[in-house]
Image 1 (cartoon, rainbow, N blue to C red):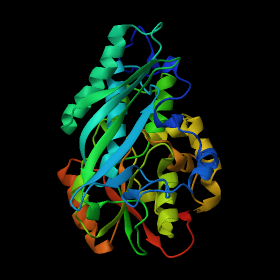
Image 2 (image 1 turned 30 degrees about the vertical axis):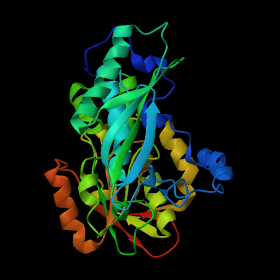
Image 3 (image 1 turned 90 degrees about the vertical axis):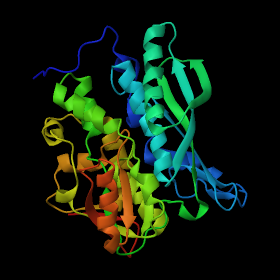
Image 4 (image 1 turned 90 degrees about the horizontal axis):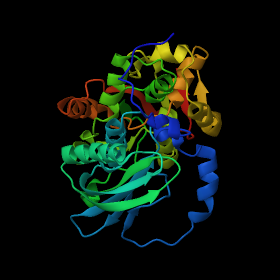
Length: 353
């Protein structure tokens, strides 16, 4: 069955890409193999966060009051509207600064485009979308780099600042911490439905609203000592990024499936088979570290591994700080933020009931 969706464009950006958004990420298991040989390299004392725990960004101490956050993210089109594509890619890239508890200060654009296939006007609209998000974040795009590529690629190098004592990593969680998720799941499902013409106008609007919402609560969570770990949920899905917290913190986690926020309509679409290939690759990469209760359906498992382009923040905080953390989310307009589980002593595994 086909549904009405966003107005048709003469050129479909998604037709140029073999996979869109954070669904383009290399599968977790393969990525671990690729990076295995680089973990023993010497690092300067000022490098507070590197690649050791697969964190969201690198953090380098500048002085006693400031540390520099540096990150980059880019991908192929997840939607056909060029301005929306630029907005989503920019929001996703800046999110890693917020996920470290930082405040963005500037960005550099990364642009790869098939110049012989895409009109200059469309490329300009992509860049315009990214610029609009940077303006909303209060930062300039101060430069960048462009190449002529086979598939359209757009993203940012994002830089930010944070106090060295307030850096939030994915490795500081403690037993008993509650887990709070800031955005609903389902972006991968929506993108799969969009590609097959099955996403209606309301679904498209919900998808754009979620993927272009800056994760600004991160900078307000930085000063809270009771916030012990922070990351954002992107291409590896909720389970994959929670497992990074578990491994980095050497803890186990328990999730309550019924408490996990979902984007409106995503269960219907997932049940109809609109699942990305990245969801299955994610499960193959880390499923052995997850215990699913007998009542968890295949559709629910797919949502837990669904790649989230520009997904929400995942917070581990002391139980008594849960209300304060939720209030930060509410004050920034994240009404779906909710407690979804907790961390406990034990091996780095996730149990879902």
